[in-house]
Length: 303
Image (cartoon, rainbow, N blue to C red; front, side, top):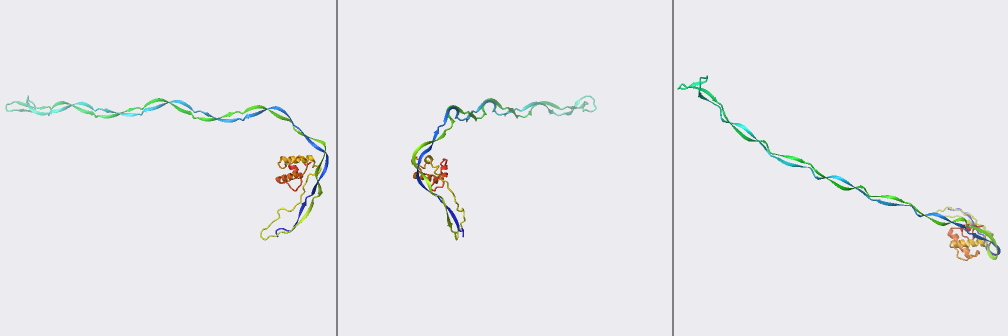
């Protein structure tokens, strides 16, 4: 058994019938229009904005030393240097000989009786001038400095950028109507003479108890989600269902797009059909009655 046997209470709605009554007076609401005055008003014609402005690049002239010719070396031939050197050259070597002379320690007398002395004859030299190499020929290198020149050129000092410029808002004055006193509604009682249908309760709402048998199921199990409950629906009573009130309801239904019949203050079948359509669209209780909840949802006081 998934659900025990129980009782369900059902509300049987009351039964109404339409009866005709004679209306001799009714309340009429007159709208007193609002009072306005013209005043000056400062309005924003164009709001404040920010625009991007281009800032051009800035250039400047600078002087710069530029090497025209790099440093180098120059080969210079240095000739050989010669000199004259005087040199004694032996022409004849020294020797000794016998020469006639006087008595000396070294002497010789020949057969003739002549005295000869041994004399040393010195060597004989001759001065010869020879040209000799003093310094051989060489090559030396002279440093040639680099050559520079001063040139002028234009260089970038500040690159091109953008900056934000605030553009102030623009204002203007215009004449506007300012409400001094709001619109009001005045209710007046005026004499009338006509018949209209009103809903009269013939049978009040009753309760009906329905036995709910226990439920069984072999595979699936069901549980009680929401027990039966009783509720009461408030409907618009005869005292408040005046022609003026029905007229308001017809206008509200017409504005909401549910009613296209005549605005005659008569709660007829066309009006009730529009009420039912409105209730269904708004998720209200739709049981064939003009409920207080429906009137309130239309923005109308049920009183």
